[in-house]
Image 1 (cartoon, rainbow, N blue to C red):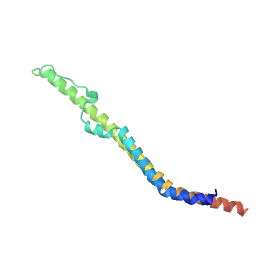
Image 2: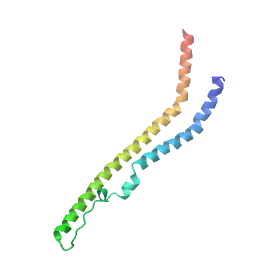
Image 3: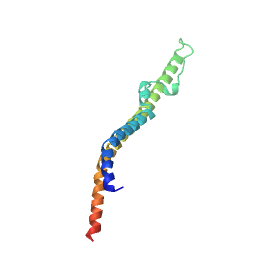
Image 4: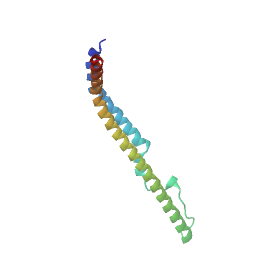
Length: 130
């Protein structure tokens, strides 16, 4: 089969079906990255204690044990907030990188046929020039 016959079919595929599949795959990468970091769940449990560690005061009438439990629970919630915020930030950064790389890949995908034609033309001209 001649390359001159195949190339128009390739271009038709490249700019129709392949673009749709590219966006589907790109969306899957974004979905995977978002869910890998469990961003929705982390937002829902943002103020939960770290690893569900809680201190229970044995006697409500004892102010020492009450304030001890209050301090420990507050610290555990602050640690949970801090760690979840770090993971959410890393996840949002990863999602942003996936989106940026997808945009760059899409532009490269659109330009590839023109690069192929340019390289073939310049190589043939270089062969016949000498």
